[in-house]
Image 1 (cartoon, helix red, strand yellow):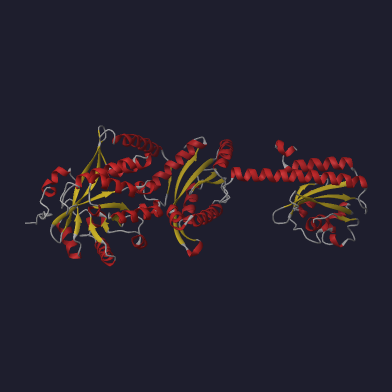
Image 2 (cartoon, one colour):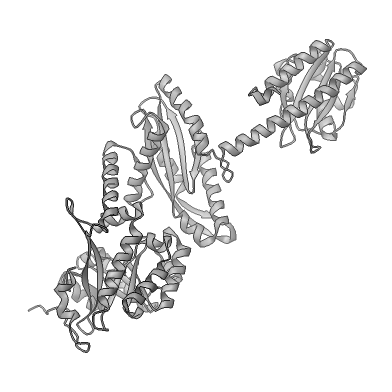
Length: 596
């Protein structure tokens, strides 16, 4: 049929009506569709005036709804030979009679599953029934209509599957690819600007992993509904996949409203969501924005630039928005170059470890070391771990690099006196993307290090990465006898619930609180609170970043006995600490010298 060749359903139905009316000149033909809500929808009726078609469109089918509404309701033919007197037309005869329509015979259009999907009607200009010829025409026409409407429904379903996300009912990436070109073309002709707002949810993965995919799906649907309401005037809203969405909006003039839209999206989406089983989930959103024409002229460029802007937001702390600028592109090129170099660093022998001592001030002795990774690049010089660790995660090299650091640290620590412990940092990507506990077990066996002397340090960002896998991994580490510390505590996403749910042995207070605690009573109060929390939960607490005797004295007064920082010792090659690592087992090495 014509629909298979791309012709619309309305044009096919209109053509059928005109052909039928040529065959039977005394009739007025009408075809209606029954929608999912059981309402009549106009498809064709070329000889009926607009006001009549509009009056019928949207009327619910029922037992006394003219000929067509009643035929659809009863799934049977309804023949009214006199509209003026038939009770079925009581509420509608005022529409038909002024047009000279005095009789109406309607037949239901039935799909192969016996569901009524429409009606086919003949109106007559005199009170009469249908002739034998007209009945034959109707029988053939109803059959053709059923084929056409079912074919249209099939095409609609295929289109829905091809261009819509089945979970949220938003458009998908295929729809973006199909329609964005036309939106940009229209914008070029009308001198409009177009914004692509790239949204990424903060905290979604943790909810999905901790509470299950059903809860995650419910959250995505709620977010989609909010997006549709907030950006109701947008040209396009699509789900790109996972927890990523894209809003396409066009506007003219300097005051385009794109910044206001980003603000509305932030305000509307950031917050708490009520999910199944009484779950109350906190979710935020980060948004990167790229604009046509200044940031690109095609889909791939604009989406890439919006993603670059999004990366900037997430890198600076999330839950905000940023517009793309050329400086971001330079940063992205530099980041890619850094990723390329760090992937080669291990093989090139550019990575090494330094060791920073930890002190137990109850006995004024060194209790162990933290192994810290360093990268010396031949051109870049010393590269900060804050730069190269994220780069290694992005390029997939973190697994090999992390294994190198762990193996070297354990091998070195195995040569020390048994009283000295070793702490090794583990990236969230290491823990959730590989059998990290299995790797630890293997390296302990290789090096002969007692598991009780090893401590794995993790950051708070781990718990928004993949909380379920993280919990399983930390439990397995405990099963091996390895202890776990939460590093940089107080700067990220952890909570009392995190401390309660995960098997930690030690809390390391971030250096930012220690640095100013002598001057800032709030920071001192935070440190004191963490110490109290540690005592209540039977967790050791370490203060990082201790650089002055004043800080150390204040920590002693607060009851913090485990400290780390430049006052105790700088991160140095292990050869600088042979006076500690070569000390006989029963000898405690003084942590620091007392001030004169």
